[in-house]
Length: 178
Length: 178
Image 1 (cartoon, rainbow over the protein chains, first blue to last red):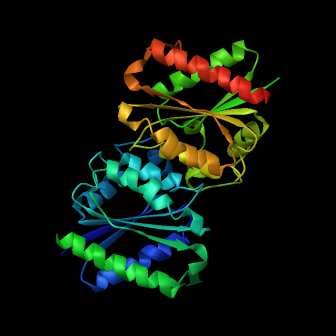
Image 2: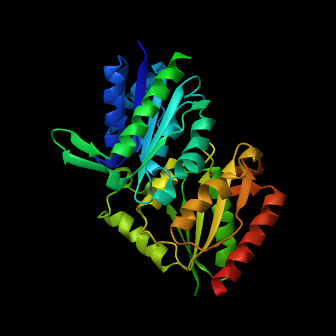
């Protein structure tokens, strides 16, 4: 059974970014993939900021990433790039922490003008972690993602973005077979 | 009296990156500039990671930045880019937090191959904060920076880097006059 881990780098509990990961995770589970989610904001802030490699909660998530065939890396755009909270987590991964894994970047932002934050901001970091098969990624506008009922976990996604997420999910499945 | 604030985004208490800022800060003080330093690692981790805009310690540092004519932004290279801890701080600054300020980027890394982390990684973020006069910046190799006595705060810097830091200091002073 293939395994996918999502790393969600939003400081908000119910962020629009996590709408993207939830949608893809659901499709992956329906396709028989084992999916786990790491919400960086739920990890101990002190361990993240002071780069505590001995942190047990962090070590557990590192084992999850190490065991994964595919990794989804998701972030809202803050100051024209990925969030600091996401980067604190990526900084703690081993130097080759994404080697031999298919990686799908997902980002959401307020303006379409920040589309390149995936290619110019996030991908060089993923590349330095050893990732070689980095999928094209999906960028969504905040207006294309909407929570309906946060407690129930229901949301609406613009059709255009759904189509792109469906394609990205298929690409991720294909990349993991290779 | 001109004011400069350094933002140091290293998780380590006595990082090589802070050798760079200390050297420039000393030169600025000798030239009559009022200098203050923000070590992001000394701020409350939870406020940084959960983007708590109401945090009093953070608000105090934001006032320091707002009152500055020049800002030094310093980071070691982690995963081919600035650190997550630095970015958590920049994420919390107001959207135009660096407008009308001269900004000097300083980075240190293990390989000269990451020189472009200043131009491709850090500068777009500074730009999105409204900074327009961003100086060229100085990139130093870890081997060019050495602590002698951390308690006494003494260090050695390679001559080549000293010359570049001296020039950057002058450029910063000139930019602040304008």
